[in-house]
Image 1 (cartoon, protein in one colour):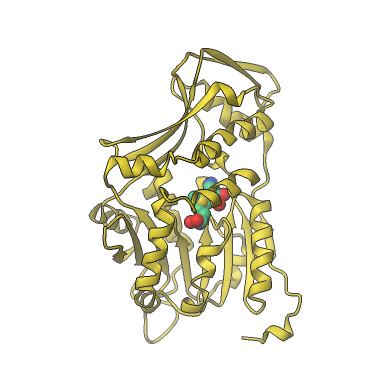
Image 2 (cartoon, rainbow, N blue to C red):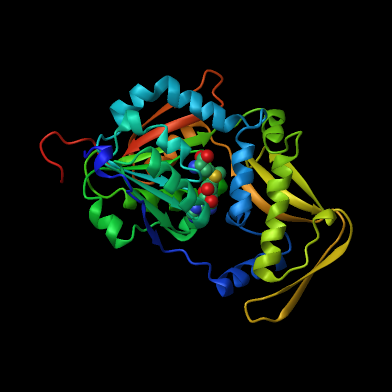
Length: 345
Ligand SMILES: C[S@@+](CC[C@H](N)C(=O)[O-])C[C@H]1O[C@@H](n2cnc3c(N)ncnc32)[C@H](O)[C@@H]1O
């Protein structure tokens, strides 16, 4: 690897596949708002402010996932470093502020770092800052919406011929229903390529006591409430809608049957929301007091259930590490066993 001094002004490179397609977004949102149970994708939680609010959530005492996952990386980092490929292209899915992946650079020694996120401006700032801290590491930013699949665009796909380490921490996989999670993991498996030793390192939140879960998604300070409500401001911009924050309350509840936290925005009074659809036509939806807009699911898994899911997606021999209280787990699953006598098979 070259010395830092040889790259005094190295810049991360960016490939932006995701461009906000206003028409498609308005179409998607209109369909969801008009369903009997109004809903929208959790990706709309992450505009620039939403990404910053999420950062604040990870600091909250009630929000155990980030802290617990960090403990697992700390306690089991050397075992993980033995399992994952060295000198890999580290591909960070939903990278956010890139802090989690960068805390593993020393242990995992990646050859290059690819940060993937839909919140492109936030990612750009985070990656430029990270590049200054790690001037010798080749860095790429990839602005993409991976909810409909994950395909690495040619410059990155062509460059990443060696082993690939896909990284999906923070239990973001929990935003998908189990069927969607399986479909997504299959696309991640494909994105790992065929190089022996490539695979996925993924953080997964585990099923647990309802009180602990609900507090994590409805903190006393109201940061998660602000994060959820900010989605309405985002929708107002995208749809020229007239959501008023004071008419809505944040709600988080655990469904013990479906094993998922549901986040909703609940109407405080009967009201009508108006917006413009993809054709520019006026639309409206009446919400009775107590009716809601469903904004996020966060499924909780068991160790056995998630191991099976990884195998159904095509991964082999999943291993996992947990914290003492078994609140959270980090899984490593390879696409194939490492080969000792050649990079390709
Ligand atoms: C819960 S945050 C996790 C951030 C960080 N990886 C962590 O674990 O702390 C989810 C991240 O995924 C990104 N994201 C959400 N939906 C996405 C999508 N459909 N495509 C790409 N990125 C997405 C968000 O912008 C956000 O940065």
